[in-house]
Image (cartoon, rainbow, N blue to C red; front, side, top):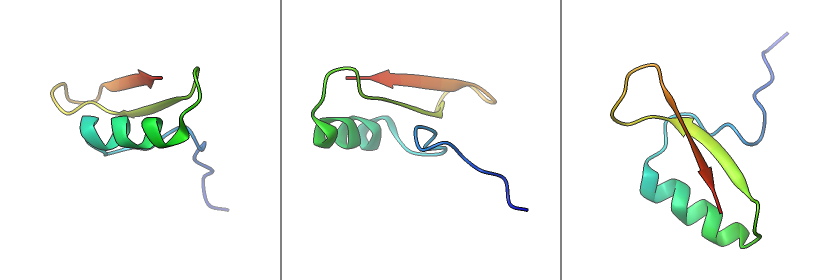
Length: 48
């Protein structure tokens, strides 16, 4: 059975792509988690 990835986990996307996705959502409190671009094995929480 394949592993399920939550809809808020976007993996390897850039900060600018995360900002674009959140601005399209356009709802306060929207969030996503992405892999950090500068710190290996770390994550970034992006919140609108």
